[in-house]
Length: 235
Image 1 (tube, rainbow, N blue to C red):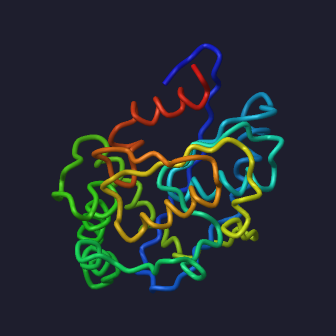
Image 2 (image 1 turned 30 degrees about the horizontal axis):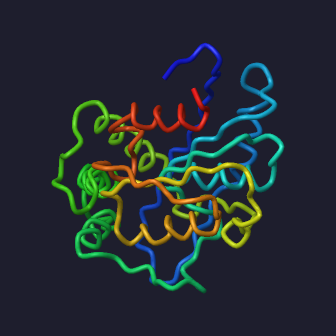
């Protein structure tokens, strides 16, 4: 994506939880607001205000930044976003694995398997979508996904790599910055109610379901994500 009036900066955290979550769970994310602060002030000229685009864990970091530093954030594009402090307690639903996701997570967590076998299960789960045919997404997006996750296994990143230090989940209603909440229709079924609840708590209108993509549309259909950004920027 390019536009003469748009400056783009990216931040990446190569951490993906590999642990099977219980029915009642809580997600804690690293202190990512510091990451956004660095992106906005350290890398190149200072940016006074930015549209934050966050996928998965990146969505949680973007929401943290919007809550803690609202004057620096002009808007949010959230894609299959987690939320710091997210839990199924006090919600009308429980987090329960579906029949397609459960065996894939078991493979991911099986330390007796070769790393490549575990990465293949991760790719099926997050990139293809658990109910989709394995290998639905191929080529360079799959190669990049596999390389990133090899790095995660190589460094032994812990599943609980830090905490956000803020309970954004219970304070989503305090965020008044424009937010577009989206997710792929092939994403993990157990997580879909959380995305819907995120949109409801933000209270900024209906969410957007992205067709024919799973958890990582930026990898498999980058132009789709670019269109969301253009829409948010009104360009």
